[in-house]
Length: 179
Image 1 (cartoon, rainbow, N blue to C red):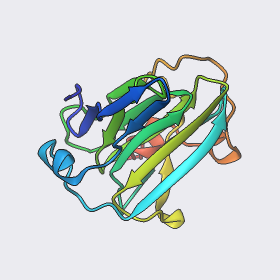
Image 2: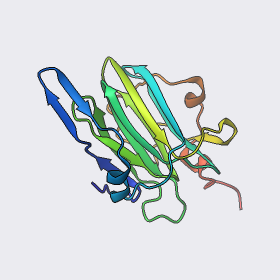
Image 3: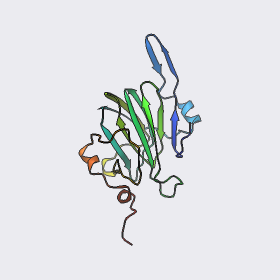
Image 4: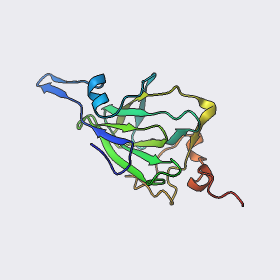
């Protein structure tokens, strides 16, 4: 399903369930190719966080990663922000709940910033990435920058030291450089 931001898709994978539990096909090349997700994936990541933890808004400057993300346990509010200069949705964000219950996945194309906040007691979050993590190329945007205006579901999340000092939208995007 297309969202208001080009390059951000919501995907409902096939889920087979009965009284024993469920089985989910989290990746199937032909189905994702048909949805337009046909970049090669090179790295899978799995994070575990507790309620109120916010991770983001992260991106890589010269080696952007596309990410297919989903939650296998718990729930998160997941956000993508368009940081592509010249894009008609530059500076816009899209957010959605991803959870164990709804089994939605979100595709975040290369060139977008990404973040999430945990809304359950615990969440297992999975990222399927199109490029390798490169720490020296990593950048971030302040999670609560008023210019972006993300409507997060909680006012005071717990942040990493790095995320707590992330630059503003204008600083990160180079929009406030003197002429």
